[in-house]
Image 1 (tube, helix red, strand yellow):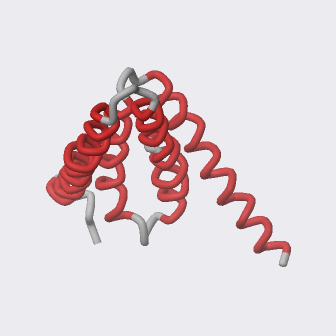
Image 2: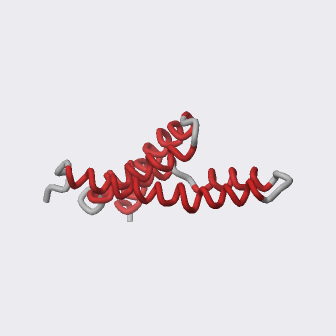
Image 3: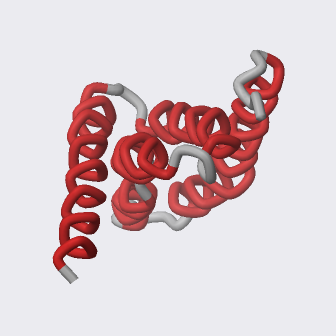
Length: 124
């Protein structure tokens, strides 16, 4: 029982240590879309290593990237658009998110996976 608690605390510590720099970087970026794209690229680089390096995934994948990329930023932008007198800004925001940012995020993820393979990071 004590070893399970210790492991959970270590895992929590790894996530927290990654989350703080991820949040600080997101705060410093001028456009939150850049944070989402960067996070997707980094996840693409990390995912091939998830099974062999679970601690790296806790630190960088869940902590850093999870803090860097958030759904709440999209919702905040959408709520601000909904305050406009016309529905057009909100509709544009939704279209941009669905067709622009989502596709760009998936492309960044694919690029990260490709870079991981191309640079021989997938040694077995």
